[in-house]
Image 1 (cartoon, rainbow, N blue to C red):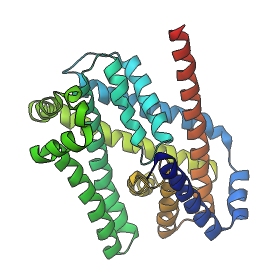
Image 2 (tube, one colour):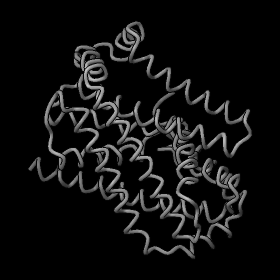
Image 3 (spheres, rainbow, N blue to C red):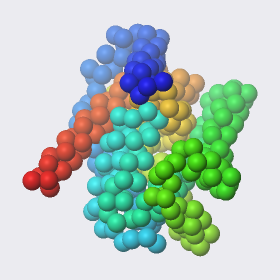
Amino acid sequence: MNKQLQTALKIAASGLLLWYIISRITLNAVLEALKSADMRYAPLIVLVFLLSFAIKAVNYRLLTSAARTISIAKLLKISMLSWAAGMFAPGKIGEFSAIYFLKNEGVPLGAATAASILDKLVTISTLTAIAAAGLLMYLDTATAIKVTVAATTGLITAVGLVALPQARLLVRKFVLMKYESKFAGFASYFFGYVRGKKLLVLCNYGLALLWVYVSAAMIWLGLLSVGVKAPLTTILLVNSASIIVSIIPVTIGGLGARETAAVLLFEKAGYAAAPILGGYIVIMIISNILALAVSVAATFSLKRENR
């Protein structure tokens, strides 16, 4: 399947999911929620976005410390650029663009890849643990277990691809192929970090947990903007579960999948669907504008550097 068709199918999937959840609520109810939105919360939401980028920047600093010292300012830029790329790519795969940006700052490609994958594994394992609690709380036990097992299986598979020599051999042979030599040092950096820097790994998990809380605070502000007052704990559980769902690479940047999962889970928690979707749409609008602004700023910066 060519890339154009894949992209078209993912756009269609995002559109269908959004249509499904809006039609289930009625468009007028969603529009009413959006009309009542207090956009004075928008600057606060942007500030929380910046805080989440800063957390990721500190995490990258820890993960790349054994390879090269990069300033927090540059890592903040990398965090923002890789996030913006993830907004427009299926399953957030664009966030792996951090590998490219780290390499440009002098981190060897193997080490940059190891750092990026470690960041994703730590974040996803943290989200999965929290999401499991949320699913068990708001869904029937059988469904919650099925979803949790599926997410955990995906995580274990990802760890296996990194940890097992046979799996890495297959990746080198069938994925990297002629580019294999460019990723030299991946395994030694990855396992050297995990085994030799256990305190830093704990710090990585602490930062991941902080990032998850900050992400929940962002949703909290978005919901407040449409008049929904939900406890941060509820938002933390639901948001973690919806992020895990959005990682499945069937939509563009998780668009549609995350909102649908969040609305359904918040309904189970006793909240009206229309304002919940309205709050998520507020966040979606702000995040897309911010991602576009980051992308445009990066493009102009690159043009200036090339003059």
